[in-house]
Image 1: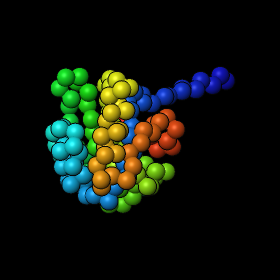
Image 2 (image 1 turned 90 degrees about the vertical axis):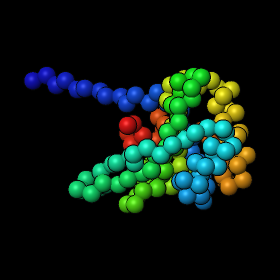
Image 3 (image 1 turned 30 degrees about the horizontal axis):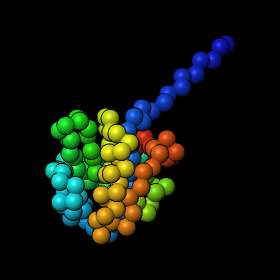
Amino acid sequence: MNKTTLKFELDLDFKLLAISTQLKDYIFCFKINKQLSTDFCKISDLELPFNAGNENNYFSRYFYLMPEADTELYIIANKGFEGFLVPEMKKADFFILIRNYIDLEDLKQLISQLNKIPEILVAIEVDPKKLKSKENLIF
């Protein structure tokens, strides 16, 4: 009997920034909007099942569309009520997920501007392909 296996690869066509800060999500977005002249708005929480039970875990999300480039930016909290979105990165409080094209220079400038906010301890780029729980970032 022949066996056929199906290989499935996730579409990780996005850039990911990990951010460490002590700020609450709404204050964090306010500071980013002020520093970067953006307009992040709250959208529905990201809902993921928790430990294969009937309970779900919720992670706050904010969205901004860069009008000149059609680049989508999402701020996603790493900490939910029941655990972490990306458990292997417990020191990251938020992620900025960037969909569609962003120039390398624009990405470096974005990271630089984020690091200028006094309340942000660090903002760095992360390779989503190296994360164990990368499927949690696809929505």
